[in-house]
Amino acid sequence: MEQFFAEPAWVALRLSLKVAVWATLIDLVLGVGLGYLLARKRFPGRELLDAVLTLPMVMPPTVLGYYMLVIIGRNGVVGEWLQRHFGINLIFTWQAAVIAAAVVAFPLVLKGARAAFESIDTQYEQAARVLGVSSFGVFLRVTLPLAWRGVLGGTLLAFARSMGEFGATLMVAGSIPGKTQTLSIAVYEAVQAGQDDHANLLVIITSVVCVTVLVAANKLTPNRNPLA
Amino acid sequence: MNMQFNVDIHKILRSDGREFTLHARFASASQRVVVFGPSGAGKSQMMKAMAGLMTPDSGRIELAGRCLLDSAAGINLPAQQRKVAYLFQDYALFPHLNVRQNIGFGLQRGWRNPLTRVEGEAIRYWMEAFELDHVADQFPHQLSGGQRQRVALARALAPQPQALLLDEPFAALDPGLRERMRAELGALQRRLEIPMLMITHDPEDVRAFGDHVLRMENGSIVRVEENAA
Image (cartoon, rainbow over the protein chains, first blue to last red):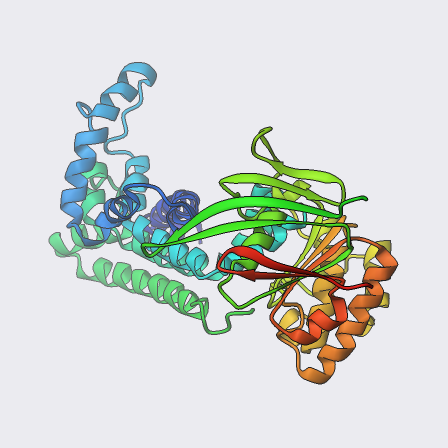
């Protein structure tokens, strides 16, 4: 049994899950915050900000990967600073894969969260404020519970997208077996190396995981029962 | 004479390029004031300003002897500290909370909602007063119109407010029920002895509650009628 789970396929799956979980958690926190901001606050440049944050959905992952190298690479703006002050190098680490997946999947959480917050009648929040509950209390007790279906639906899609991330990940994290070689990258390597059996197994695992996540996401699609 | 209401607010509202000037001014020693007028006259906006849900450009609001807003003195209490009960036209009951959680909502401060089995003297009292015991565990969408209004009233009254603001409280009810809820609300106000301001466009409400009737048109109070109560 232990030997079975040491198989390269399971190592790659575990890595993919780890990367996707971290990327999704980061996206969830940022997506809920920024989605709320875009839905409820009026400020100049609001739609421009939305457009910029949605870019990863339409840009080729390789372009995103290039941008990330420019920013967190050894000579990048942030990368150099991290290297100089903390001795941290992100490139070719699993953390870089997390960043790549988080960036690519972010618009899915953001769009879902913004739409969910916009669909809530502000009267509920007003009623809660008049009843004496603080702004943050209103957010946690009224806004978020009423929006959670939309938020969770987007989050699951982001998780599935993170699992499948390839291009940007390859550029910033590379393909180091057991370290940064996620499932989707392992598939590519297996096919390149002519290991069809291995590729088959990897493809089946990936498909099962993605279908499971999508079924869950569909179950949580908002508007099926707006009151539940 | 002790003033229950003393309002003088000014606000310019803009939407879709149109401008609307709200300039509401009235004072009343009566505990029952009815604001009467066509829709779009600014009645709800005035009430929102009193509850702290909208900030006027300038003005003063005094309710039951407490100063809630005085732009000249830099006073503007947030909605949370105004201690008013606000009844929304369609009640705005929290759809994700059951009846007892809704009633207990304002009794529990902080970041967490009351539990589904929440207990408490005030919750018990209001559920009994409004005959809601048998629906305590139901959710708003399972309730009848009259029950919804009772839950909304109980929720608003549980934290012991110092004034009652009602936005078209009977508009969502059918006529027979309307008559009964009017009587209930009238008796309740007399018992609590707190000032009550009601927005309506129904002449029956004016007849039932209008010790002091304000007519509002185009953002201003244009006529005042005082009836001997």
